[in-house]
View (cartoon, rainbow, N blue to C red):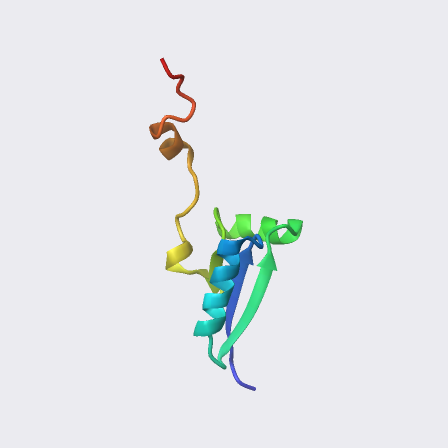
Length: 89
């Protein structure tokens, strides 16, 4: 049995997510097992949250969040620094 690299793509089905799926399909080789996961599915979304996925598309390779996908997504401090929640005078 040949070992496979498991590549999981967390997708919301939008155009940007579909472009990422296409890119990964182009880059994949016979050693890659691709799995596209629908973030509209509650169980998938819960798993994503547990993993630390904060925005999509996101890619997991052999259970590790790819560097390009880590640390993304909105956070309270950055939103407040941009003025969200501050009244205009």
